[in-house]
Amino acid sequence: MENVNLSVKVAGVSFKNPIIAASGTFGFGDEYNELYNVGCLGGISSKGLTLHGKDGNEGIRVWETASGMMNSVGLQNPGVEHFIQEGIAQMRRFGNVLIANMGGHSMDDYITGASMLSNADIDMLELNISCPNVKSGGMAFGIKAEVAREVVKEVRKVCAKPLMVKLSPNAENIVDMALACEEAGADALSLVNTFQAMAIDIHKRKPVFNNVYAGLSGAAIKPIALRMVHSVCKNVKVPVVGMGGIYTAEDVLEFIMAGAQAVQIGTVNFNNPLAGRIILDDLVRLCVKEGIADINEIRGVCL
Amino acid sequence: MIIFLFSQFDCLDKLFQHKNQIMRYFESKVVSNEQITGDIFVLRVFRNQAEARPGQFYMLKSWDTELTLMRPISIFKAEPEEMWFMYRVVGAGTQRFSELQLGLPIKLLGPCGNGYPYEELKGKVAVLGGGVGIPPLCETAKTLKNQGVSVDAFLGFKDELFAVEDFKPWCENVYISTETGIEGHKGFVTDLLKPGQYDAVLTCGPEVMMRKVAAMCKEAGTTCYCSLEHRMACGIGACLGCSIRTKNGMKRVCKDGPVFNAEDLLW
Image (cartoon, rainbow over all chains, first blue to last red; front, top):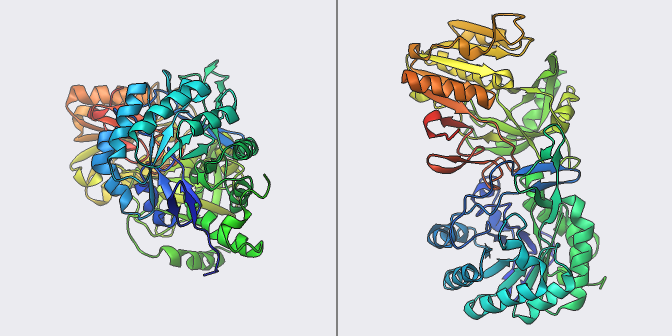
């Protein structure tokens, strides 16, 4: 084994490496664990939870696009209570950092869900204020900095766990949004979620998705995501977890050089179900090749 | 050339030498890829040693990241050394599959999904397929015949026939329909089915056809299993991109299916 230090810290939580499975692409880890030991990853962010379970959206939910994909799953999940009863034990088996991702439709839902999770055996709460696939509310929290500030402030009051707020690239101004969340008490920020996008079925002469708009992810968004991570890192003091179209170890280094503390990988898991392990192995080799002894030493070199 | 390829694959397969039902992601090689009619192709690849059930599928890709998602293709035939897939060229992914040639690499993830519950079936069973819903029923018919079940096949085509000869060794009768009337019964394949004569009907094909089959079976009191098709991203049950609403809640076509008892479906 090459002697490269990949361990990182985000909001006081130690990750053995900076690769985190992104919420919504990885379930609660079980399915991918049939293919490789997902415990090798730094952490896993759970499927996005809501206080009460949700069935998700009707109609087509996934759609291939040039260098990426769109999704409109609509936060199908078993609910916070069920996650606490079963999901946590399931994820704990992997031995890495357990991040609970939670979204909401109303302030009350956010507060109740967050306080329940705060008392549960999780390492970190990732607050989703940005899911574009939920019709009522979800998106509004992620667009207006002042609305986000309110929800983060209230959740902060009931959340004793490290609190990471996941930002939408659809925010009116991503830096203002990041600053508002930081001021409201976020311990960390993760960005970016999917870009609101659209596809039309020309044969049916109708939008592909029942919700009309859906979230775009994958390699297509990487340069924009990188720019957003970079500009947020320039302006905030809290750690930033970068994501958006990361497919390779080279992409990981780019995000870390742009200032990210760690990264999340999502869409690439669909392209190659072993992607997490492969990127991790490649990252060690790449660091050796680039003369990087500690991943932390290159962080933000491009800021 | 074939022998040479086998030996190459042997090295690869050492990684996956446990014969079991566990799905794996692995690289294989194309044995052949033949256009059998119109836009229908049969792709043969070296298989892994995981046991595959009829009605299961693999996620396939013959690209790196030029396309994002792998494509789900059902098992047409599970041979000792090879997996056969029959597919129709419908989009960018299957277009790339159609360009594959002997010896080229292809990545597989599988076997995925549940497959038909063939162990539970006895007596007389009908398999009824329409279009590219026909291929998975071939391996199913073979498995049923090998356990002593009597199988009749009902195969519905738009126009040109395919795969009919592949069913004959495993079936007592093979009934054909074409929409154009070029061969067999002119009309829909469901016109030919008398579900009351069977202990179970297994179906795969267009949803409108399967709904009809399910309704006919319900009326006749015959058990009916439907294999659903759905757009998928992960293929293993993680992304919830292929969820459907059933009488027993939300189910993932890729993991809880693709085969469902018709009684559980909300059409």
